[in-house]
Amino acid sequence: MKITFLLLLSTGKDIDLAISILLPSIYFYFNLDDLESFIIVVKDVDYILFSNRFNQFINKINNNKINYNIIKESTIFHNYSKNDINSYYLQMFLKLKISELIKTQYYLTLDADVFFCGYTNISHLIKNNKAVYQKYNTKDVWTNRSIKFLNYDKNENKTINQT
Image 1 (tube, rainbow, N blue to C red):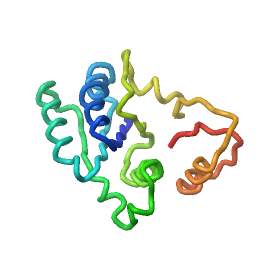
Image 2: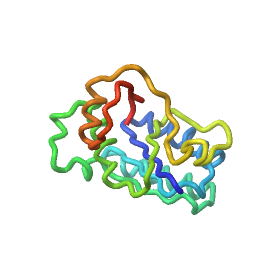
Image 3: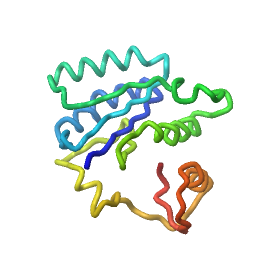
């Protein structure tokens, strides 16, 4: 079993954090044999900048084990008006919409400012064919919308409050 990583970058600061902290931590601490693909979504105006910085990183580590796909935001929401979606909801929308492109059973949405700080492999994230997560005794509007979009059929009063 393999996993897909998903990263959405919305600012120049996100790009810097991803290149300098997140990506090296994945390379050094995650078992790359467990990674099917790494999908990175960037704003259209940042596509060239990020692609260049990402390729510099890949060349520096001299590793071709990372199967990655850098996608412009506009290719995901091309049928929607970006003006109708504020930045928070745009990020949440993109996280849901990108699920249509993911081919693995599981995927992990990462933020640019997180990092792996110890050896990690898929068995740390998935146990007995179930994703490891923490439940909360709340349910909010975002969770209800996500459940509906993903056609999740279990009615629970708890949430993990993440996509």
